[in-house]
Amino acid sequence: MTLKDLSKTRASLPSVHSTRSLWHSEPSARLLGHRTTAELPAEADVVVVGSGITGAFAARELVKGGKGVVMLEAREACWGATGRNGGHCQPGVWNSSPSVARFELATHDMLAKLVAEEGIACDWDEVGGVHALLTAAELEAARTQVRRLQGEADLRGKAVLVEDREELRELRVGEAMVGAVLQKVAATCWPYKLVAAVLESLLDTDGMNLQTGTPVLGLKRTGASWIVQTDRGAVSAHDVVLATNGYTSYLVPAMADLIVPVQGQVCALRPPADDTERLKHSHSWLPTASDDYLMQRPGTKGLLILGGERCSVPGGRVGVSHDDDVDAVIGNRLRRAMAQAMKLRPRGSGPEKDVLDAEAEWSGVMGYSRDGHPWVGAVPRRFLLVDEERNDSSAGLWICAGYSGHGMPVAARCAVAVAHMLLGMETSAAVVVPDEFVVSEERAERARALALPESRVDVARMPVS
Image (cartoon, rainbow, N blue to C red; front, top):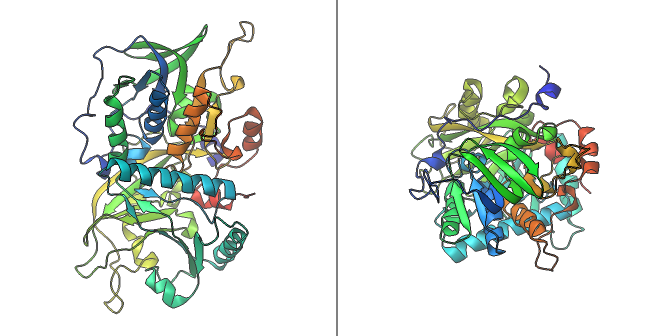
């Protein structure tokens, strides 16, 4: 099967028995196995499918707006991509259009403010991000992008190109790197704890009903309502929000080539030696589209969380919608990736360790968007199997998904935006997504003419306006 064929693969339901993410090593006792009511409610104002960062922030905004929400989660709360990522919240500034860069910076600021105001214990740490560049072509592309930012007064200075060898050594990138972009706004966190805190707060309200262990099997339009079918019964709702990311096409098969499941892999690696210096920044590097991203947990001996390397295997795990295994080749590459890319030991302390030991290793399912942007808004009628003679409608079905491995700096505010659309907010307080994110049939037609970006490298290479 070719990569083109894989990129049209319909997603499955989430795996029943998934790999164990480090972020799930301290689960919320309140959320594990949680069902707000013993029986599945027969009806709701809104059903939110999915309990990751998108589902949590959409539900939070809907409850604020007076809606009664039933959240259906196939497994435990926040057990999908949000609970399996690399722990980064790094807005794309230098490699995004100005409108997208502003949206991502605002998402970061919204999350940082929430964490500070509500005292959420999720290890939120403002570290800045280093994007290492391996080739002369990457360096020249970065020069062009950073120069473009100089024309945007509010973005100027948010990303700085570093070419001086001594400055690169200070940033701890390997000698093979020819340059780096330093983004000043970037954070690391324990993503599960962030979302768990939001969900726990919602459960203290009257408007929220969370049902874990309840996979959604199908959607059916009946009159003015949606019937959300599960193996425990059905829920009738006026509106449904799909916060399903890589699993979206299980419920909307017509979107199988627009939001494609892709399995990613992450290792928690032990620092190599007693003299290892703690990293000041988060890092990413893109050699041969390896798509690697790195952060260090708090403490001088904090674990190094490294994800990526999936493009080192045939097919790049495109079309894979299960997270119940890890790939041995990718795992081996992750354990060896640091020696050339990073300087973990003090200068003059000898060579880097070739292979690092892993304390934990896991996989997760991302949703790669064919045009590189999330899909946010009302689901068009043509995306659904509807009966033309009966004039079936898609009204009331909403989507917020397709983050292409870059969900933390966009998903929460996309979720707020889709909730505001559903609520019909038209005031200046309503969050509006960039035009590139808005769902439409016309956008889908344009997207289908594009090749699926195989990695964040390809996403970054897409034209920006």
